[in-house]
Image 1: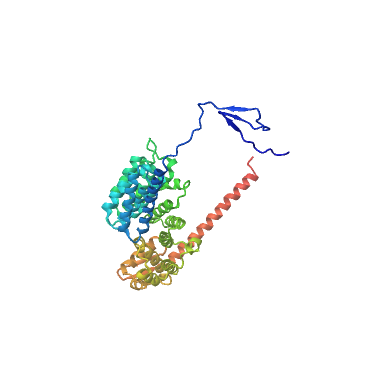
Image 2: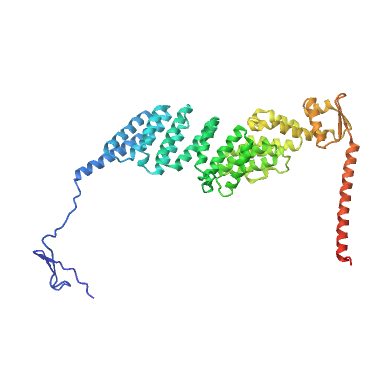
Length: 479
């Protein structure tokens, strides 16, 4: 089929007439006198161009200031102020002045002008309702990070207080909670227990139902609150409250796997068990904390936890080598971890000389950690007990002074160790404190062991006898 070319329509006196031979031949379309073509008025092009030029000027001023921020902070402050002035003059639009004020807050903090920093921050907070929540959150977090370098803690607390007041006014609950957690960590770091307690109560209240019970639907926030409280209990040595909280955190961690909070909770749990001298429980908790710190990329804290793992492992007299695990092998070449590994080897071999050398040499940094130093005496007592037991084994009578020389301790310490061995029934002996000798009763010890073996033998026969009688009764029931 041949394609017909479009034919124009003729218009006469408001009536459109089709051209001859067209599909519309004979048809007419009339248009009343009231119908007119309407055209949109795009406004004055000169005014639009002027507005675009002002917007470009503000944007260029911001990037010019941003270029000078690193090397010329004073000049950058003036230029950022120009950005604020220019955009404020343009109207209510808030874009570049918000970014400029955020940069000015950071620069004032860097230059140590914390009063100016607080003033600029107040101005920045006044625009929080004019930007998105994501922009507001990023700005607040950036300011808090830059303010953390403040040498005057009161200035830093002022920044936090301004933030929390603004967030409460704007009902930004999520950001208020995260900011409050940061402030709580600051109080914890500074040892401000009373302020920390008040803040923890406020945080916990936001995670509770109207009846005062925990709202499990806010499990991740509850876990953060409990992690803070557990750390506070560690600082204040409130073991009763710690034992009350710890099971609750274990219930929450089964459903919520935030390794940052779990690492803190497990570390605190390990310290709780260490205080109770439950070495195996402490070993398990510290190892979990080590893995979680490693998962979060906190290698510094993970290394500290590995030291605690080795310490608890030795105190528990465990045969498990923590360095056999894949996670621990990563740190084997670290000098501090290598020193702990050597300490464990010397402990296993009852090499008390090497143990003393490793613990007293400052270059190994074993005792630089106050927590390890707290349990050093428990560790040394364990190894001395083992060395002492092995030392007296071939003797029937041995001088207390000789034993003190072998262990490199005072005679009083030797007597204390011998008393523990006797009470634990590790040796059968009598201490002659007047003459200064230990008399080992080998015959009584061997006799006791022989009688214990005979008793087990007799007990086994009785069980067999009882079992046989039961089967015979089943085969021949009484008539």
